[in-house]
Image 1 (cartoon, rainbow, N blue to C red):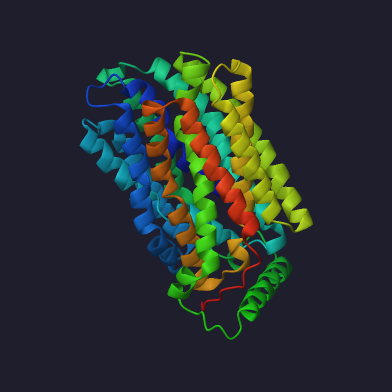
Image 2 (tube, rainbow, N blue to C red):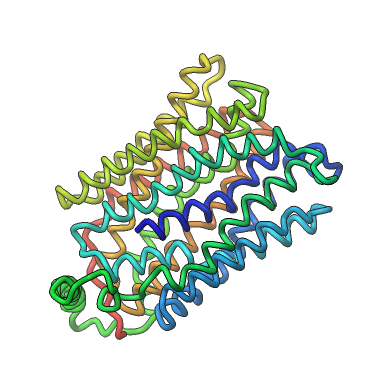
Length: 416
């Protein structure tokens, strides 16, 4: 978990640091809010196209080698964003970054099913996903500091140094990953034979239970998982949640600059507060979901809390402290809902179907990463910040409704 946790911190910083780079890139003649919105979102087109094949490859060749490849390539491409010199080059590099990172998050979700039984899964996913919150806590102040001190170093702009410096750790950790991870519990040298046996038997029993639930359905192929109504329902729920996640991730720095402070380094410090609240909140909610065994209400109520908070944060004339509190509740609600959400599809998917189904849910849901910046940017420019944040609130409310309408879905097994 510490290795996965550190990896996802770096992945998320490299994915969303463009939101901070934007504050300095506005000085470039080719850059604008519209260019930013398209560049932020086009990442997810490449991500979408390569998620499913990437996760199937991971299932076949093993997590440690494939995730190492992902980390090294995304680190190199994230650093290459410093070479952007036009809207076209910026779009191309963001697209390729999405291609490079495709498969990492669903790969980890799949990888956790190899190690943790169902009753621990929401807690482990929550623990893993606190990396997003910690990325905000660390990345926000650090990015703000870089923008403040690096401008003009060796003839480069501050936003170029931000991309270069924040990309390097991903490359280094990626090169070390094959020596830091093992693909399955039975290969772990730090477990004794009895511990390996207990864990593998427990996980095998869960696998048999999921297969038994789908007896007679003959859903053994990848395409059966992709056609399952339960998988598509999860896609819809996740899409709404991701609108909220990237609404916060990409636009939080700008919202804070518009409402709280004009100084980039203070924006970085203040942006850490909502993410710190989210780190604590999602662990509490995920732990409670595991203890009670309940999933749907934990997802739905968290999404509804985020929906209300986003709507409130967009009201005109709010005191700055109330804007900050509202954003903290919004980010906490979104992150708590996502952490508990991933226990739903892993209850009904296994084997190759799990590799394909989890990746498909993540890739379709993450198309919201393309839609969300475009939607928020258009509404903010043509209407108001209130309209933009209200649209995010609506999508989260719809995700909560879909979650409550969903029933217990039958498992979809797969060979291998």
